[in-house]
Amino acid sequence: MIYLRKRKLLFACILLVIAIIFSVGDTFAYKVFEFTTVSDIVKKVKKRFSELDSYQADFKIVSEKMGNKANKNGRIYYKAANKMLIDFANPPGQRIVSDGKKMWVYIQSMNVVAEQDLKSDSTSIFSAATSKGMKKLFSKYHYRFASKSQPEKQPDGSMQYTLYLKQRESRSGFRNIKLWISEDFLIKKAYGESSTGKFIEITFNNIKTDIVLSGGMFQFDIPSQAKIIRNPMISEE
Image (cartoon, rainbow, N blue to C red; front, side, top):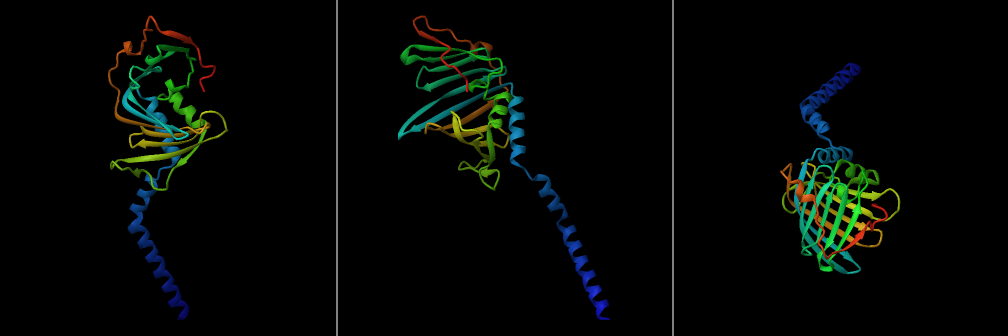
């Protein structure tokens, strides 16, 4: 009898566990299905940028080194095939332009133009908004979520994924980077620490994608009196 009662109790416990599993089964399946890894986010970011035909955003750059701060702002335009225009409001008159084959950095205050030939597979700043640029970025860094709760709620109420990146190998450039990524997988903010101890934060606002941009925007006419420095960059790293 005792043995029988034990079997009935065990059977009842099993039925209870089954009932609980079925009662939360849908919720459990939903949570598993919705589970997102950092690799999922990286793949979606690369895919998003690979599909961009054009892009426009206001930007703000805050940099600091040894207690000295600098602020820059303006607007960035991108068009497929590595065409890019960075038009600075501060410092006024400064521009960086790329037609995909060459780039020009114009510093109005010094009346200087740096003209740089770009490699066909360039992954410099001018391809950072492309699939190649994103692939190179994530290939050179280890990456993880910056916190357990993702996406994170931001001060403005938006939800953004936050990623922490660390260089795979010690070299020039940024040792550590933190990225803020919107739920439609565009980069909203980036914070980096360079190997020389410089800290830079870049914020993007008023982002518009797949807009009509004239090809003429990405041509640069060198001012007649400007001093030209050709190919000042030995490497695009």
